[in-house]
Length: 349
Ligand code: AOF
Ligand code: ZN
Image (cartoon, rainbow, N blue to C red):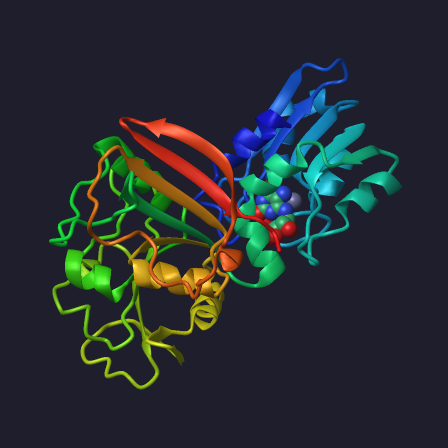
């Protein structure tokens, strides 16, 4: 199952709006017979790739799948039936399928006499499919807030200079995060100050994420802005009553405070098929996402640099007492070149 989870991760960034899924099949004597993963939405499911690789050796064997095999005929046939037809004897899946259209595969397998078990490495498999599971369960994309700061939590110096706090290695790692996301979101402050490009560079075969700028008053993104270069799709989110001027693709959203309504933004992105959002910039925007309870994961890159004065990574999030603090659980700490990458997820409740 650990191998199946690692295989599934190879589909990150190219299977949306579908899940990432990996499958490993052992033959009757426990030797590797075949493996596969879901590569792109609409293409064969992981189980089908693994069954093709295993051929006759699947008969009497065991399939390890990161997600409950599907029971439906969607863009491809039902995987539960394919496993039965191939003569597989046992199926172990990590996470039950919450998608009502596809669920029921475990029952189909049991009814055909296969031995079925569920939950092996369930937590790891859940984490690996967090974007898709969040979107099926909550009807909104999974949101990863990323920031890069000094050891004392500053993202810019007092004079507003912000280039380059973290190392080239850390910046390259951010491109991997972008490549795994369906959309990259920044606020008007970042758009105005940095004129960011927000495209993925340096990763072969990467699907460019949708670039989203929250430009409430429609004044930050100017003609000629790098996000309008046509190199990747771009969406500018503006207030319902703002003047769009010559902006190409805009989505109009209700106002909330000084910005836009975050749940409405996420609903609009979900409708466009966005399952994972990389929130990249602006302490004010990050603060409003945290205030809306819309941050599912935090990745902080910390450089061994001190500034003392300057902008902090997170702006006002409506928190004024320690009791209201958003407490997170650290899930990973890794050295990236000279910097530290910390990954954390909010504690439930
Ligand atoms: C996948 N890949 O490897 C598995 C999936 O759009 P369809 O017809 O391909 O069906 C997608 C649903 O099938 C998906 O939402 C999930 O519930 C189930 N399993 N999907 O894309 C796979 N095993
Ligand atoms: Zn399937």
